[in-house]
Length: 239
Length: 239
DNA sequence: CGGCGGATTGAGCAGGATCAACGGAGGTGG
DNA sequence: CCACCTCCGTTGATCCTGCTCAATCCGCCG
Image (cartoon, each protein chain N blue to C red):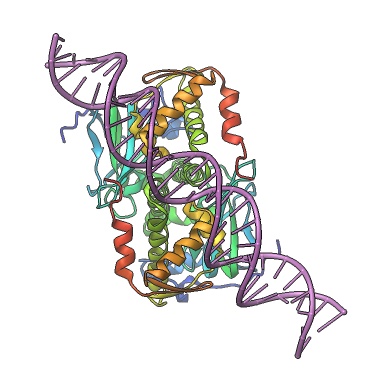
């Protein structure tokens, strides 16, 4: 609605090893700077885009934390992912030329706005960028396969364990602790993502605490036994 | 393994309104013919590609029916989709340069092999193709959002109803009946896709039969009351 | 005809949902 | 600064959907 606009450059962004320019050569990197039009700030609770809105751009998260969610007419609602710095958001909009999900900031955030027609234009010239765009989309498809596996075949404890491991691994890649994290989302949002009710999420946290696998104080989580979590995920309860 | 190779052209394929060349102009269509290297036959039960195999090509299904499935080390297995004529398969392989799921033919099938480097090359020249490739990938992402919604928030009857409606709608777009279909997959495969056990799938079918919503004879399904299925999907049982 | 894989159906069980009460943290306004 | 309110999280009791285990049936193929 009221986009703050600040000129910026990918070429000296501290996220360049994670984000859009990942793996590009210096001269290609400079070309990418042409893609990022402006930055935009989104307040906590605000939406970056909404289901039904016209699709124009992809967004690279610079700071902050988002959730994306889809909804049915009857008001049901499913969180399809949580996104953090360096991740690309908005890919759902390409196919229909308008967005099919909401992107909501779970904390104050700033994103780089990348008009999609510019991305397409530039990736016709810069092969590495073209390939990178394809990889980003493929990565999202593979990620979703993982979520389908989780939703389709895991029990509550396995889901939560997998969720925690995934979060902490991504945070670690961004220089945060391997064992400590602050959840940016409510129990209900975790539950929606994992296909569980919020009470079940809460109970499962408590169970992990009882078993000395984690410490939980509200949204602060400290992982005491990563291996235990891994064992829970890989326990072939079925079969 | 033993690819049958037959030269072909998209430009006179009867699937061109559904498949890769969708919406391209005649002159662009001719360029696309360069992309499809060969066709390949896959026998029922055979795999088009497997988890771990090197990624080289996308595949357009000409005839037949596939499932794709991912697996965990501990042997758990999740069907991530069913694909039919005109649909593109293999997008998962781009990001890691090797496939992360299996594609298994559920009936004798024939696919058009499209080497991905050729696709990238050509889509640098043909803007419409470039955009189409992006749309195909985005479409897959949106489809998976839908599956996540299904797995995360629907009960058994809603899942099966949504599944049947989706299948019959896609078949109808290919010129088949709106009300009659032959399932190419087992109850177990349906169950895996829908996050249910095969017995639950079977029971839910029986329930629909009792309610005169469908007729079921083994894999032959006739939909008697499409609206009832739609109502089941949209029944806001939660809230 | 017999064997086998797939489908159906039944009985009993349990994991997670639902309903409900309560507690604690953080924000707001008097 | 404190009182209040609201939102979020925890925990308990009970219920029910879908899972498990098991028997049987059906259609197909050799």
